[in-house]
Amino acid sequence: MSDESNSRGEFAQEPSALQNREGRLHPFNWYREMRAENPVSYDEERDAWDVFRYDDVKTVISDYETFSSATTPEDALAGDGPNPLSESMISVDPPEHERLRQFVDDRFRPGTIRDRRPSVETVAKSLLEDVEGDTFDLVSAYSFPLPVVVIADLLDIPAERRNEFKQWSDALVAAPREQTTETLQENEQQRTQSMIAMTSFFRDILENRRGSDGDDLVTLAANAEVLSPTEQLGFCILLLIAGNITTTNLITNAIWSFAEQDILDAVASGAIDREAAIEEALRFRSPVQAMSRVATEDTKLGGEEIEAGERVTAWIGSANRDASVFDAPDEFRPERSPNRHIAFGSGIHYCLGAPLARLEADVALAALFDRYETIEMTDAPLQAVSSPVVYGLESLALHVE
Ligand code: HEM
Image (cartoon, rainbow, N blue to C red; front, side, top):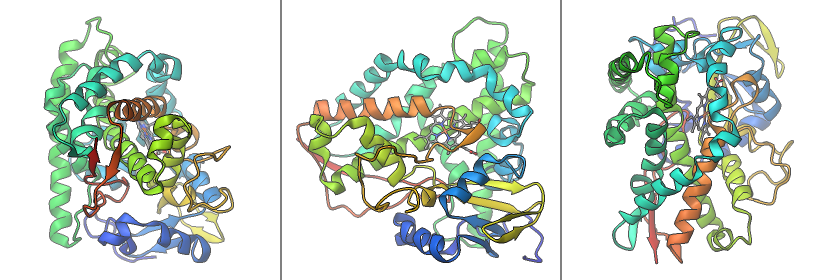
């Protein structure tokens, strides 16, 4: 174990294997090597354990008694500033977890979410109407704004401020491309500033809606007596950031994968089932590659001794490529059944927004195929998003007819 104290900023945020352009774009070779040779290993540079095999990853993200979610956002996301996120459902263990999640569970059930299909379709169509010319960047024109407008609608907050929302969310999941003490400190400062901005944005709105009878999620939180004011803030901030970059990258990664496999036409015509292809994109290029926990007690995993208080990173993106669960894991096979990917997590913290993310991706692809007869990737170089957790592309230039 490292003797250095774990004061934030002293440690790298990303494993060194992923601190370069190629590693970020194709982390899967590193995962394969680690699954075979070092499936549970300690990284001195990050002062954290890394876990790569499917069964171990599932254990870490679902066994909340041994692996707590309690400090995740402080360590991985929010820096040293005020942090209502640490009082949101994603950062707490039972029994608080149930209280923070139950009051909203109904709003995200598949049946309830299905009713939103027409309004998501309207958003998708109107974004495509704004696309000009026959070559455009899918990310900035479509996969980024779509989930932001949808969640802004659910929270009833002005979608026009979406560029600010993006800056805030990006700051929370970003890692600097070059990791030096300076860039890491700057990165941490930006996280703190974003947290302050989001806190003041939602504090005012929550205040105004307390006691009112609106149907939106901010009003639901403002009137939830089971939540303290900080927990109400944490809930709003979590919803604003959890579903945006993730869903953006699901849409982008799906189109990227279909183009690469030359199956865009087959998915568009229905010869390949669209929903199954989206599930395979979730497995093959998982938008969330890793989640962190902290060991609550000394424990053994994969033959290694993990001590109480140590941080553990569970590599979801690696679990989803584990040959002990998926045949030919490095092949994109939409016909896989069952497809037991854990892209939305597992256990009590299973993604609240999974039905919404699936709906958004399905509508986004359907609208795109409806609008264009042919869609092709150009040969513009690909740049992965610079983040230790989120996986996708900064931009994806498409040629359409
Ligand atoms: C493709 C898109 C998405 C992916 C890949 C994704 C992935 C995940 C994962 C892996 C977790 C588990 C975290 C953990 O175990 O610590 C999670 C939790 C969560 N997600 Fe998502 N997510 C997506 C979209 C969304 C959307 C659209 C929303 C809401 C609008 C959302 C809201 C949440 C919330 C609130 C939690 C915390 C649940 C809890 O702690 O009980 N996500 N998500």
